[in-house]
Length: 530
Ligand code: G4P
Image (cartoon, rainbow, N blue to C red):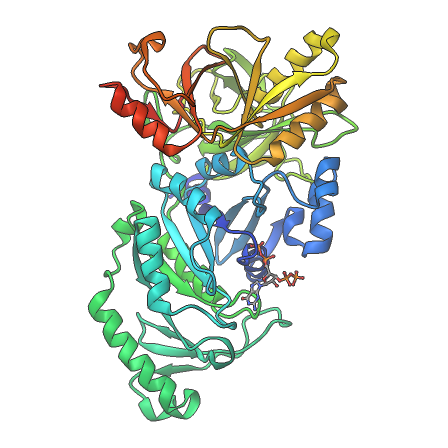
């Protein structure tokens, strides 16, 4: 294998998804203890400082004390080069969170053992399922009182519709947490609390066959319960099957405690063995294989105002194949131009590093003078192909935008169109009118504040937002449908997107069903495609 292939094959790129407070930040911090962190974005530096480090470029983030954008970090562990894509942990997440998943090859789902599957996990999970992204589950906070282990697994299977395969099994929880049982090696790893240590603490390994020794350490009751549970588990749970994991149909489950640093390295080691090298990606010319093809990448996120002093815009791209080298010429397919990527940077937020080289699996941030759009492809000048578009996710909150000073129409249209181009918001129009009535749709309500703030600060335009009651949006898949003849419900609203595609807004799911029933052959979709 050439050096070039080796570099690509040692890359692992994944996103961490969780509901806020499940322990994603803590887990990430612990991962970094095991590898020499090359670059870390603010969000993993410890919470108090993190918030400032990540958020400096956007006042609104400081005001709300949250991070609006996702960050990326890279570290080395055991010969692997690991890229973690962080997704914002706040409820007010945006479409960026979804798009980040498009750049990942697998996802780690962190679940709080006392809470089970929570709202945000469910949403992000839907995207993973849609893309068939392999999911690895880390059930965290076993050092606290936890829900019944079998019930937790049941919940994942029922709520998320994916089979589970525990790789280890917890022995008790909270004050009675004694450690985990490694199913593969059939031994018990005893719990030790090493919150303050930098490495996993002294863990004693006891083979399950040495019952007397085991009872001596974890006690008769815990040993009996473990024996019963493992018997039950061996009989009932899905068998481990790497192909099913890789196709996103089976999730390996690990138990641990990120805070006390127990089970984290176990997870990391197993996860790295099970997850994939950078995956081939679909383009309009066929599959592009990472180590068989020259440089190519796609833009999955555009971030404006990374640095207020420079009013810059950064396009984040995932390298899908080949190697990027400093000042190399590439083709921006959608723009039809050959260009040099200026100053590619490896991380975002306050720390930036100019890169000399990067490989398939890596994420780079490139200065964007306003030419890139989400989903754009970059490849070698002699080539011509486009990666499959990134789906447009259904906004769940809608508002009508009113301009306070109607004289500033031009700035307003320019501003709102640019912000929409970055993908922070989606804009729509009434079905039968032009730009005079604009409806904004967002995935997280915080984006409304971001829009208002940015229009005022960057375009000097004041707006008023009037919330609309709609919660469901549907793209019409069959283009032959005549929207004027469509029989909807009384609360249904017909709108169109910037490209003129017709869409429908509904107040509730019942109306969606009713409209489908009343219009034979109508096909509605929750995701739009470019
Ligand atoms: P998030 O990024 O998913 O939002 O979660 P984060 O890691 O910030 O963790 C949320 C809270 O849960 C933190 O406490 C953290 O210390 C705690 N936590 C994380 N993992 C574990 C665990 O394994 N066991 C226990 N007992 N607690 C855990 P906090 O008090 O809200 O924040 P902080 O003040 O400690 O930073």
